[in-house]
Length: 209
Image 1 (tube, one colour):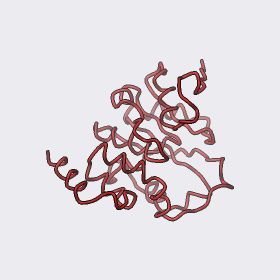
Image 2: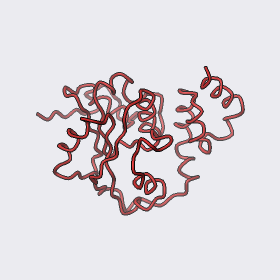
Image 3: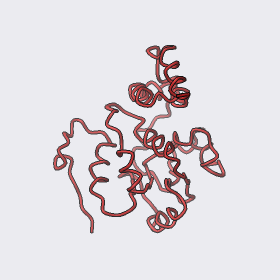
């Protein structure tokens, strides 16, 4: 059976909408063992759900390739898709994207779902990946492709600096919530001048504690 929930039925003000909060509202009502996140403008192949089920027999975090004519040439994603094994990549959590992702409900509940610390764009998916990586979960990128069919006309290729500037508020919240030296390194260019040596020192001390 399929159940649909509107934001106003979950006590969430639509004006405060964040994707992670909306997904929490649905995930915490789930009754199965697996959660599948799929963007509304993604079209999955007919064997998608069966592949999700089989993949979780050996993996905890299962993600699918995205086909988007505008984005598929980005070096960030082509490098990720070319890797023979996601588990061998450094900072593997940073590639997590709920465009087409499945996790085990028990793991999702254990980490508290998507964090409510982010009130601006970005980092919700990567924080979820970081939390799952901290629990030692196995990540797998599946060969099946989910097509992105929305927003192509609006998409404009942006520089890495422009993208980092857009996610800066969430990157700062991410780092302050974790004080993880790897998070600091990955998002260094987004953290801005407000991140000084004291922040880095706190990360180093926290990592060695």
